[in-house]
Length: 335
Image 1 (cartoon, rainbow, N blue to C red):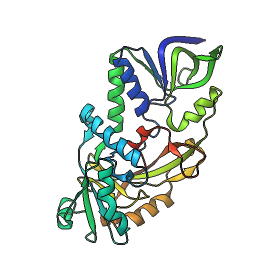
Image 2: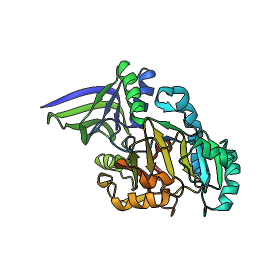
Image 3: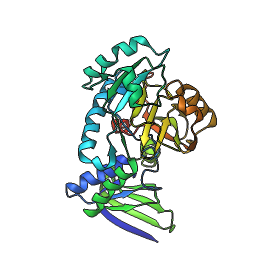
Image 4: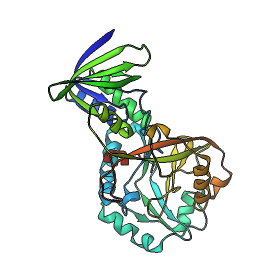
């Protein structure tokens, strides 16, 4: 027995992008249905380090993303301050880090509209006692931490207050066409086992790493690759600010305060299947071995959880010029 729902917009994927879109459309008076095969933030939107980037991390590798991070972070701080702890951040260099990059850092930031202010090393150690006494340079930036679950749930709550509907544990298993146009999505209710059909004027694929899978059900092809990032959570908060390694984006170079704990990471490892995203002991050991040069306390800190998120990329066919499915991932990125 099937059940049919009619709506203007069906959004598939209950992460930051999907819930944010549901809120935006609901505010504009559109009727929306949001569905997810699991629950809110079950993918990358929940498995990240919660760093609300100033953009400084990307000034060398992707200046366009750096600028967008800055703008989007400013927007989130204004629209959802209840979800943000405006901690500020430090970029710090340790012995052996690239001196040329350190010398160019502030200017690279300036060209992206990001303010990076030099900090006296003694002052930096007073600000963050967990730092190594061997740091050789420090800059303050406008990093912050964000609660991605609160952000998505607040988005969803407002969307629902305006009439939007949300179906969790509903997996897309097919699409029905009228001529060349897809107008119906066929879903499987994983709890009741029944079939649900949603007839919509527009269907949005906001499934992140699973965008290619959902597109394939519709007969479309998106060539994607996946990057896994592993993170660990400490039993206590190690620093008051976001602490970044002053080098080009790499593994084990971010420590983010998250309420009473800290999140340390991350890695970037290609995987074949987003459903196979799992942290490994080898990744964690390598992260800690690298990270203690910046924050020595990592060596004797008790960690209470390890997890991994998967970042979706669209293969462009231009060598290393693979790009994120959405620039929005830069805000809640695991890399």
